[in-house]
Length: 197
Image (cartoon, one colour):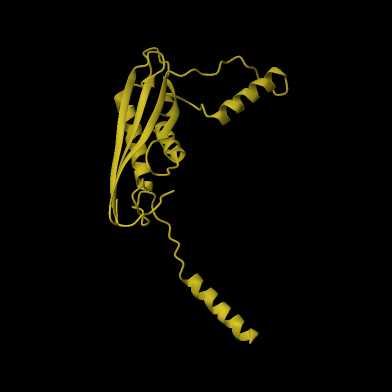
């Protein structure tokens, strides 16, 4: 009896393993797991598009004396009805901006983790625990980049429609002037409820 049970269990295991499908796809390929949320290709397209538009606007061009403009990314507020990992969007955008501008601008890291590391390093230098000096000030910023994610959802029976508007704004931190703004729009329809995370 136990041999028969072991054979059935082994056959079940082999059958279950044979049904799995693992495939590597290009990051820009449409998601085969769809729904009404932002997809991977939306994140990549949005980051590429926003970086190109910011560069083309000339707002962050170096001054005539060669001084590089500086900015940091503050936040991407999610006002949509979807659960969205905002950090993946901001990280991809920051990488694309760095690649687009190179060393022509200063991209500052104002995350709490970076601030803690800078403070700790400066304290250790002051106490002589590590080599180096604090003869340079922490860099100030000329601009801040922030954004919002908004959505409008409609449901009729099994059909769900979602419109997403992701807006980024670059603000002058001296004058408060809105120097640049750009949108990314996306609309989807789905016949079943899918939660994207």
